[in-house]
Image 1: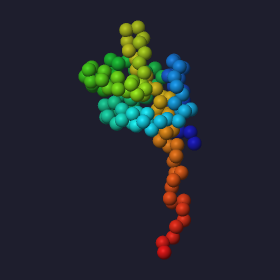
Image 2 (image 1 turned 180 degrees about the vertical axis):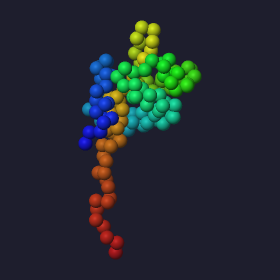
Image 3 (image 1 turned 45 degrees about the vertical axis):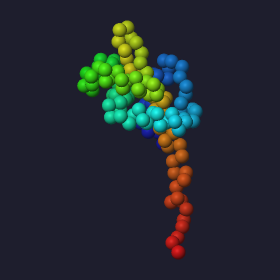
Image 4 (image 1 turned 30 degrees about the vertical axis):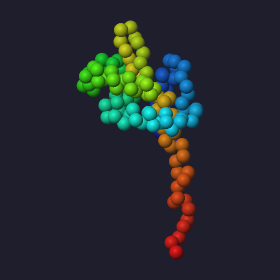
Length: 131
């Protein structure tokens, strides 16, 4: 069953802009998944990422992101860098403006990693009766 957000991730402009590794076609490694989850585990970074997802294909200029989330410039810069290092977001310069974009391929790969083995080890499938 396709979920609405999954369909949205599929139509990301980030898959067209620059050649990227297709994370959803390859198996994500445990260490990579842990790094993505660690980056998103910070409330401020999660707010930034969610704002960029809501912004859609257009992305969001850093200045607007700062105004919207009420984050100090140096703090925002630090969090953006962390998200970029793990590949969750990218930045693009448009004239004098830096625009941030969510990298949907990475998120799709992370979600696929998290649900890849859903219910494969479920003990509820075994019918055991108490003696």
